[in-house]
Length: 381
Picture 1 (cartoon, rainbow, N blue to C red):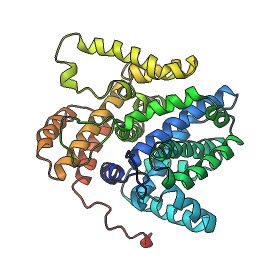
Picture 2: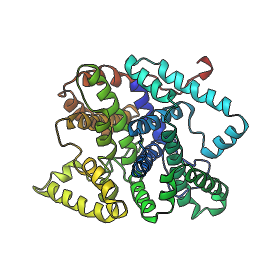
Picture 3: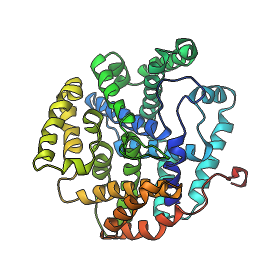
Picture 4: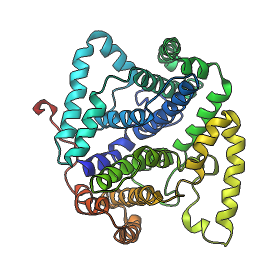
């Protein structure tokens, strides 16, 4: 199951474009939207906590991440169409989503991982968290449509009006939404964060499945979750929330500086250290200028120093495994220039130790050579 999920993230998840039946001046993939939604949800959670509410942030991240897996099976049903479906028959749409989730959970995987996913997806006790998730989705959709509406105003008139209406409805239920919508600086911060969807990985290579840094962060976050679950089930004691934060935030500086490849960073002594200073200066000007000092202090270490401390290796492993799997997809689809890249990274991964690494090498890589989900018949589930 895990390998097939990641494989489809790197194919379907990157190929499915948001607002696909609308003219648009920018493309946001499904994975881009998932990470952006997670980030908005965490910012809303921070605002809620400032207003005295206790928020389960780990639930937020997991729920958004696991819920997105259904789209890998169903393909993207855009929010406008979904709104009309729900108006007519919400029960049948729920059945459809449940079938997709049941299919994913029917695949072979460690039972404790499937049980955790089931528990998160079936939990309806976190009322405020579920409101935050719905609100984050609406803001993500608003920011996407707002950009395109500047050029194709007639095409986006109706969906933009509906989204803005739903935002105001959310603001009546969540103090954080009301605060966010009236604060231009907060909105500018979220706009700058979206630059990650335009910052492309492997920028010096031709790719069959181009992947943005934003999409890459979703993959790393999911892989970190899997690695931590396996290691903790085998006697380790990693803090899941701490590791997920490191995974989710660690490449955000590239939204501002761009994705500078590792060989360039190491080409001249002292350049890496110079880049770190530049990152801090630029992030203060482009990101931290717009947010409260207390939020900056909360997220800064995960953005600039994600691999500090004793447990950094598990997230670094996820980062490198993500690169391995990104290269594997390219090789499997006929990309010659990724063959040597794949071999080099695999040699490095073979030196890693841990039960989770054994699982990746023994089970996940083989899944990339198996049949994809192109011929799924959900009526069987």
